[in-house]
Amino acid sequence: MKSMENKAFLSSLGFSIYASQSVQTNQDIILEYKQSGFSFAFTSLNISEEKGQQQELKSTVDFCQKEGIALFVDINAESYQRLGISGLKELGCTAVRIDDGLSEEEILQLSHDFQLVFNASTLTDEFLEALEKKGLDLSKIMACHNYYPKPYTGLSIERLRMINERLHHYFIPVIAFVPGEERRFPLFEGLPTVEEHRFLTPLQASLDCLMKGQCDYICVGDTRLSSASLFEMSYVSKGMIPLVADVPEEWRGMVFENRIDKSDYVIRAAHSRSQLADTVVKGRCVERHRGDIVLANAQFLRYEHELEICLVDLPADSRQEVIGSVAPQSRPLLDYIEAPFSFVFI
Image 1 (cartoon, rainbow, N blue to C red):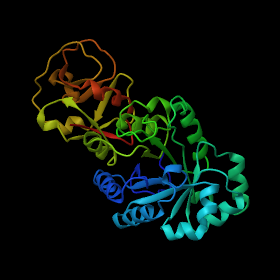
Image 2 (cartoon, helix red, strand yellow):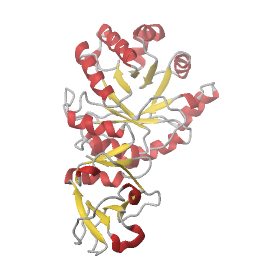
Image 3 (cartoon, one colour):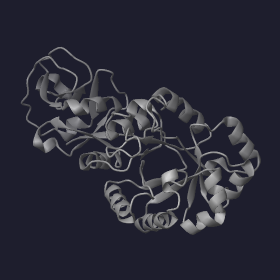
Image 4 (tube, rainbow, N blue to C red):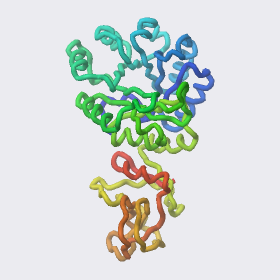
């Protein structure tokens, strides 16, 4: 996750809506996501099932604007020829993702009226430099990867990162898709950018894109998330990673940060000595395992009350007491706990 000057959206989280769903369903979805801190939405004019439903799309675009949700719309040569600039304006579009087939001249024309979002998966240096020579301001564009409905056709996380790092050289922010839990027809096999995310939780897939993949934004490609996932993602919208854990009740909701000079062995909570200064240590001095939550006792002198979460198995230490543990379903998230994310026990 890289801090980009071109911050088009209020949070790093987006979602997808489709005109083939009823207007009421889309409005319900928009409100669900908005309440969980999502700030932008994606829809497409290129899907065969969506064509001929422009009035439904117009109603959805209007509702997004009313609720303060930024919306970008996928177009290609066919949908552009069908609607043109005037038709896109009539729909209320303010940002368009250019899938493929448009000429450089058509793209430059669109840039006068719309925020441009390019296809990150296929965008080349040569194409960008050609557009820049013709007057396109690259500081005002974004890029968004494809999603891949067909299994085993998605990108690897390594390839995603490589593409994103190249685009960041131009200061172009990048969006990738993650799957949701309510899978979209006709295949119902998820809509991720990264193949290995197809069967991960939305939370882990999102953190993988933002941290390992160096994305600036993620967008849920499928329609809906479960209420549990929406709750978890609401923390991500505020820059926090939620960990299901067995901890003292008074620790729940407290915000901790991993130290900048992070260890490969433990997550070492900066400022925890002052945050937990009043905690009475009542743990066990035993062998420590990945996910164990540990607090230093008085024997550790000035490190007393320092909180750690084990990333690897460690031997017993009479100065370190195991207070609780991160639940198995949250342990994969430990690998993402570093700036800019803090963490919180839930």
